[in-house]
Length: 167
Image (cartoon, rainbow, N blue to C red):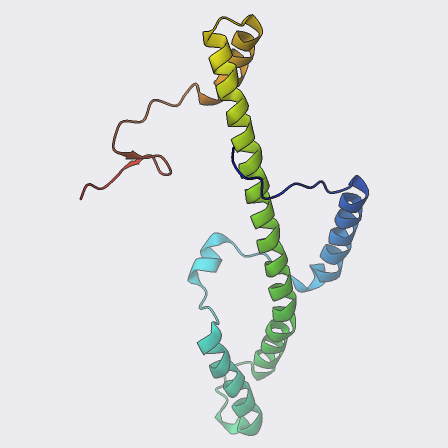
């Protein structure tokens, strides 16, 4: 029997409070957030850890050497954008960690629920083979989940349904 790694329920009251707090958080952040298209996300140059130092130093140089600011550059916007980025980064980091933990919890709880359902389904199939009418009805209903799946051929990786490489 597989080891159960997670076994808990979130009280309805807690879920309600979470939704309220998420709504409050969305409302607090809304004036400071934008939505980008997929094309925008692909085409925009990104500020990574290496780029962060470059932008930070540039912002300092702009202040200390304004004579070198090109006419097409909006120096004030550099400062505003960099400050916005740096002020929201800790918020993002906290939320990302929370989302990663939530994602892990969803994955594990989903895996365990599915594994238990598969155990039950295997038992139902066995009972149906032995002639149990209730089991046949349940097998027909639950079997719809697998109806369009063909049998995997030997040498197929079950995780990706791709042929496994041979040594």
